[in-house]
Structure formats: structure tokens, C-alpha cells
Length: 239
Image (cartoon, rainbow, N blue to C red; front, side):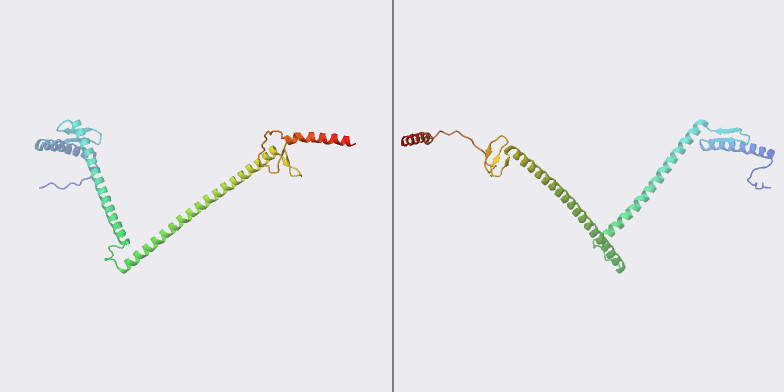
């Protein structure tokens, strides 16, 4: 007569639970030992009872098995992460390649190429896109021209203001020169002659420089007193 099936669940009776634990623990450790011997495998089993009592079996050193387990688990984790990362970037590359192909096709169509497979509706949509693009280009060109015109006007105003400042400075310098000239050469009197501050006179044209030079006395000037003396002497005789 065969054994009946046992429902796998927690045993409520503590005595039965302890008996079952002892039997199955011994069987598990026995099977682990047989597996290690028959298959030349490294086997390690760790068991904690409900009372926190430790039971273990290892075909080699338990510490060596645990270190090997941790190292192997970490390598598998890194390998799995690298594989998933490669798959992700492969998917991204495929999607970007598809987008690039679509953009290149749209660009060729906007340039008037490869239009054979398009319907009337597609051609109308393409025409509308070109008109919108052309309108945007014209608006951008007009905006740039307006900005350049405003910049030129601003520079013209700055140059005009600079010229006005220079004109004022020139007039100021001219006025100062005139005042300085009047101080040096004096002002004209009512007879048209100019008088200097040091008592010397200048001609009407104040711009003509004055040249002073020595001249020899003329003979005619000497004879004039002698003739006057003779005339005076004869007049006395007549009287």
C-alpha cells in the first residue's frame, strides 16, 4: 500500500513539526552528500531551525563556497546588466536610424525628388509645407533687413551728433581766437584805424602784418630847411 500525499503547509503540532524537521533535515543533508560524491559537485547546505539552531554541510570549506557564490553572483549581475544595456542602445540606434531615414526622405521630397509614389493629397500637403517654409524664410529676411536698417539709422544719428559736437567745438575755438586777436591787435576806432593796447597803430586791414625798416634820409629833406632859411633872409632884406 502506497504512501498518501501530504499537504505542504506548516505543521501546527510542535512535536510533529520537530520530528518532521529532524527527519527531513537528515534526508536533505544525506542527499547533498550523495550529490557531491556521485556528481563531483561542490555542495553547501545551511539550515537554521525555528529555534535558530544552525545545521550545515559542505563538500569543501564552507567559507570558500560562500566566497565563490558571492563572486559568481556578482559576475552574473554585471553580465546581465551589460547585456541589457547593449540591448537598450541597440534599440535606440535602430530607432534613430529609422528617424534619419524618414528625415532624408522628407528632405528629398521637399527638394522635388522621389515624388512618384505620392498621392494628390500628399503632394498638396508637401506644397503647403513648402509655402509655410517660404513664408517663414521671407519673414526672417525682412526682420534681418529691418534690424540692419535700424542699426544703420542708429549709427547715422551717432555720427550726426558727433558732427554737431565738433561743429560746436570749432565755433568755440573760432570765438576764442577772435577774442584773443582783439586783445592782441586791439579794436577799430571811428576813423577806421586800429589802436593797440601799447599805443601803436595798425592799418585798416588787421590781417596784414606790420613791417618796420630803417631808410636813409633823402637829400630833399636837407635842402628844405636851407631854402626856408634863404627865403626868410630875403624877406627881411626887403623889409
